[in-house]
Image 1 (tube, helix red, strand yellow):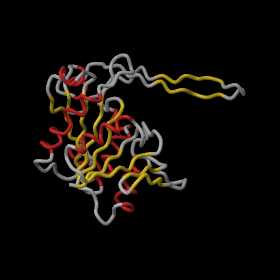
Image 2 (spheres, helix red, strand yellow; image 1 turned 180 degrees about the vertical axis):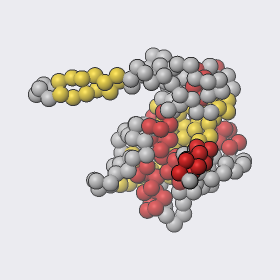
Image 3 (cartoon, helix red, strand yellow; image 1 turned 45 degrees about the vertical axis):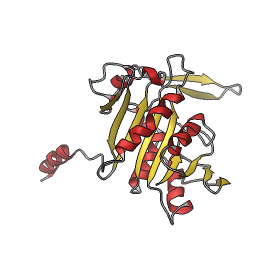
Image 4 (cartoon, helix red, strand yellow; image 1 turned 90 degrees about the vertical axis):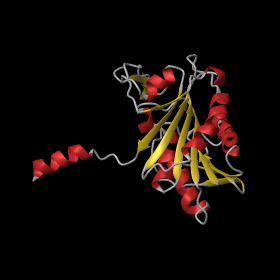
Length: 252
């Protein structure tokens, strides 16, 4: 099984080292195509107005001066177009990708691009401890291989990717793995800090600190907050079929 690794934290991120070790438990045919520098929050953006440059570190490892989506596109359509991967793993992200995070996340975006191009894809994220600095990378490393093996035992259907999140706890304290749905935080306390630089020019600093709120039972947010890992299946086709039928009637 050929596995493509990517992320949004950058080629040299600690989570990529963790992902390499996870992938090594699954295959010895592993390729890395990751952003040259951090692209957190890039979502599914493409580099359309600047050139894309590729840096080669070996026969199987490359960095791309672009977004996570750029990385997977270049891997699939240029670097390895003659033999595409069987699996795309994106991460391990430095911090969880829960609730609305999946809409902004470059980690999920890399997996989304793999999915769009017809390859089963999984995003992996390691939540950060309350101190904002402690990451239990060993938790993701210990739990991910077996979860991935189980997921690969059956078909997921078209346009589906998997999102995994591991709690900010040592592996021995993890309270199982829950199958969840995407939750949503309270975004009411999003702040924009208006500042002035040394030359008198105004600039802004975005303060993204959404509160936990009261997410529904069975959501990814509740699972991780309770000390468990979580598996969420995400579908790329965003059509709300029931509403589409109502709109058809309205325009009939």
